[in-house]
Amino acid sequence: MDDIEIDEVATPELDDPVLIEGLPGVGHVGKLAAEHLLEEFDGELVRRVYATEFPPQVSVDGEDGIAELTCAEFHAVETDGADLLVLTGDHQAGSNAGHYRLTSTFLDVAESFGATRAFALGGVPTGELVEEYTVLGAVSEAALADDLREADVEFRPDEPAGGIVGVSGLVLGLGGRRGLEAACLMGETSGYLVDPKSARAVLEVLEALLGFELGYDSLEDRAEEMEEVVGKIREMQDGPAVPDDDLRYIG
Image 1 (tube, rainbow, N blue to C red):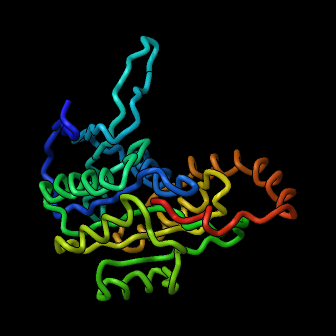
Image 2 (image 1 turned 45 degrees about the vertical axis):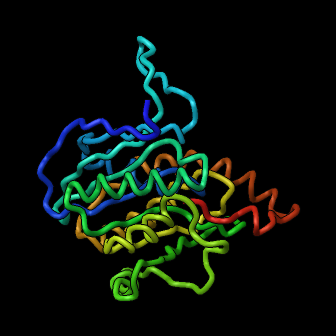
């Protein structure tokens, strides 16, 4: 196969869709948020993106053990507030150059559907358990910051430490160079575990910005499942701290 291949599954008509990126990262916050959007709004699969930069593996599903080559997927979602083009998957690229090539491809797909705005979703690690979930922001241009502040997004100098690495960072960097209005929403998370509560905090900001409403029953169920794990982590907090360099944001 070529280094990158795109399967066109469907091409619905979308009205000025907003790209929502939710690939794996710290706490799986962005991925959880994107998958919850698809679950709540029953998104339609429109593109699969295959790449040699993804791990050499297949997923196996169903009673017949059907194998599917690793890929990233775009789903079209219609909400009362805005049409969405949701990007998610199980992996990011394996090299620096791969991140650039893949993100450029993702932006090409988004632009082919007419997207002019984008939100990258992810988590920013705190190194300790979080009681109240603040959402941090970054934008491709200063004019976008006011709307995020009105939705209670915080901007902190030099945070996240080490910058925003991976597709989330490049959606802002490369997207901004293309003229895309791009922002990153990062929910605070310990960095220790999958964090449904942080994903909900990010989605609540997205609701306010884009004007749709979500239910959260499934995320609440997942959060309850994590309580036992959180209890064990609390017992460990008196142990050695995790170095800040090991908690750099990858989104």
